Length: 212
Image (cartoon, rainbow, N blue to C red):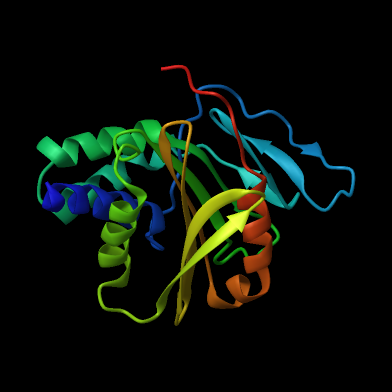
């Protein structure tokens, strides 16, 4: 059972934090025009069953066109497109609820944000999920840091990584009987200057009630 859970977590996170994948996702309904906040420093962006405040330079994207390459990457990683791998592929395709990039960061490598929700992992104890995530993300690598945060009253675990030309910040929490994985994929310089903004954005997330 533990091996199965770690494999699922591994494939999910390798998918969402891969710095080499130009991730895109199909959104079932058109994304509404972002609504400015009163201070004009951030504005609302709407995904499937959620909304998040981001700087107005962010641009929502549709990742449908890139799904074949994502699925191919998963298949190559686990050596199969059946069984657990097949379930993960379905989850990735159906559970990405928002994706976009920051048009205000360098065009060569703009900061990207992907928001994923997963139902099957939400029933596990959060401590067990964190243990699995640390095994996958850390891999005995001291450059992956973990912090337990309270952002706007919500308990969130944040993993951060920064080395050479790659950096990411992954935020994990449970809400509405779902595990939420939110990943900013960026560069070390961008993350050093914008990590507080990432925290603010994740703290702002509003999740619609989910009817089972």
